[in-house]
Length: 210
Image 1 (tube, rainbow, N blue to C red):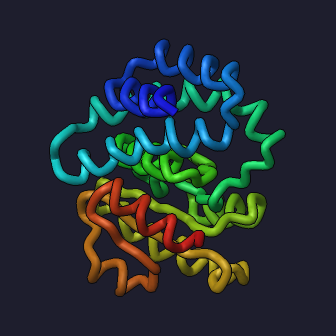
Image 2 (image 1 turned 120 degrees about the vertical axis):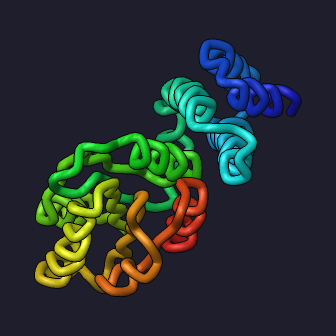
């Protein structure tokens, strides 16, 4: 299956148009959409995620690889439904109320998608009620909250409290992250998980979904 290795290689280099062509070529060869997704696109994104964790590549390379993955997935979308490929789980993600930073959030989103998790991106400045309602509406497994400011990270506690009020706290895992956030803060507000980087967040999320 040399073409799947090629898809992975070109994805790692961020060559989006070639990835798109190769995905189509693999489909034309009769390779299943599921195999192309898992052994080509997700395999390549997995390598990028590991390299990012080890500081071998940086944010720009990850963004370029993710764009290539998204172009490949766009070609596969119609076929994946036919193959009955289920997503591994669903995560709702956003930056908390009062905070407009989104680079970290976007990185985590890409890493989650790279693990085959369906991501509902609520954007920035997201109210606790919005996180929780989106989790209910989409039957989400995880709520991921991001903050870059010490002044806004307190909103994460409100997300936890709101999930309790709405009766979904036992059904949904709440993950927190961002520059000022620490493990002790995570523990103090009763969230389930803190990770210091996007790749670790994706590993933790996948573990929650399985």
